[in-house]
Length: 319
Image (cartoon, rainbow, N blue to C red; front, side):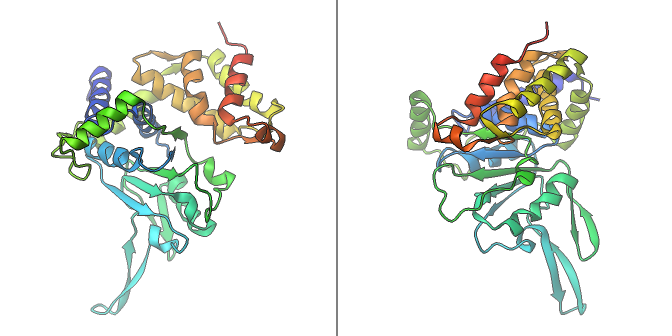
């Protein structure tokens, strides 16, 4: 059995390996690792060209996991994701052909470009880790993570994700355009021959596997959390329900997601227990997509992150 320190060191090495191909997105890398440790899913928001696809591909390589990519389009059907029955002329019977969801890391590119019927095809897979088709339930590989991307600028021809599906994502990570030094590093690498399609040439190596991820998850579950810190997480969630800027606050599922993410972050940082600092660090990425602002707040240019920061400042921190 691998000890906690060795496992944590492995996740630190994963971040370093991903950094060989992805520059300036350290927060997103950590967020994806936290989602893996919690068994959750991630919504990646960012303009085109900030390495969302490369990030998922590189992470899968460092973790020795299978990854597939689906480009969501208006004509994509549910069976294109989950799979469908195909007639075999040799046997004269229909056989189920697995869709791209049968993988470890599924990159759902521009998930808001496909109609709700197809979006909902992911719902059972994300929540139950299985696919039901033709009366048969088929389990998905473990671990299983959906990383769905969204373009925050272009909304023409898109379909807003329903609250029920947004709530299935553990984290919403915003990938910003890198700072000048990081962007210069990116350009320099490409000028020197870096090919994002050839991660082996970039020196990206596998560090951990599915067994280590499972062992790390068991370790995370043992991280302690006091009654005061649990109550603090509840008070933050309740604060969103009473904020004058919020029309729909965080549900109890959001509260449990916040605690799970804080526990994973505490484990990654080597802490023996969850502190209010861990809760505060994870509050925005866990809760930003779980609240709906009032129209008047949106007209004033108030964003979800600003509202959450205000709530964090107002809620009493346990000593």
